Length: 211
Image 1 (cartoon, rainbow, N blue to C red):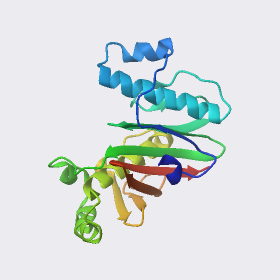
Image 2: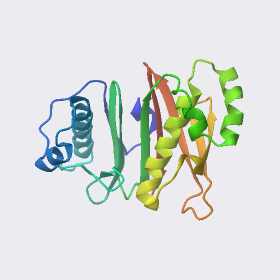
Image 3: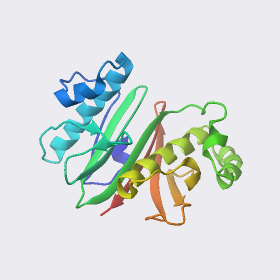
Image 4: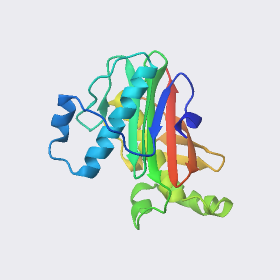
């Protein structure tokens, strides 16, 4: 799925089950006494990261979280991690090829009550009825949430500052793309273009900004 959304030479690795992996001591220290679900998500995501690094010709290395829980990649590498029930994925590239990457996976199901109003600006709410009429099989509220997550993951490594749900206006296109307009007046970027896909109960969004 992920390779369909991201251009080469991005290394995109995904799994629909969990992998057995020996974590680096630094990674084990981060997990501490995490519950089994968290341990499986974390470990399989690191398996995907090692595979992606290998595609780029790099050795495995510990992938630790930064101050905002963002993954800290080896020098010269950009990328993103995502996981949800039944899916884990990593997308990596060299910084000479891409400036930033954002990916997010969600179960393809309606967002919980109250989520849409909590994350959407009014223009996004206004567009929802038309999207639902065009294709009622897509959970557009969950797709909007996922697109905003991908926007944040692409934004933070570059801007190094918070971006709230209310700080981006996203136009979803039924054809499998979306446009994000950043609403902050002093934003270092004006917006992002992304792609999305729904398959086998998983909803996936992705952004890749060339260097």
